[in-house]
Image (cartoon, rainbow, N blue to C red):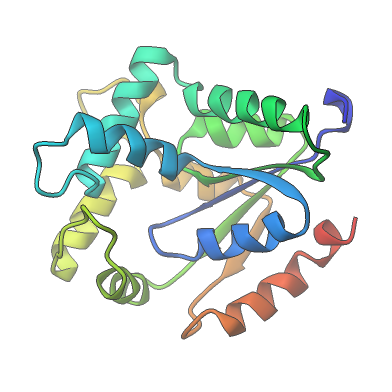
Length: 204
């Protein structure tokens, strides 16, 4: 697949909004995928290994900002493209899927390459319950106010740090060209709803 033919899809959304579930649909339809969140967690587990909660959102945000400062604001896109290039030498894919898009430069990359940037909205209390019911190893148990306070560090740029290296979920949501809702209980209903919404992409 040439660069001109590359189909690219990005997925953004707040924590536990259903990004991984949506990504699975596209992976099964033939896309090569990489999660920005997974990359950040790998680095955070090492960078914050002495913390009892190395992959808390506070640590993930700090690690992501550190990586962008160290290797450029577009570091996650560079990693994704390199992994896609390597994988494409062995197998043909429908396109490139990058999920857990959180920074303006990442959202802009999707849009500028004529891609589809999907935003998933979900009620905060629903997401909080999902998170507490399915904690990853290294994630802290929080009350609702703590959960929302940590999320705020990713919603808009924080003072005292270069905006170019920070997460800004408000921006990602604003520029997304396809928006989905996920307040379903369990995954099956969301999967049915999402497959219908993505039918033009999956069947293209």
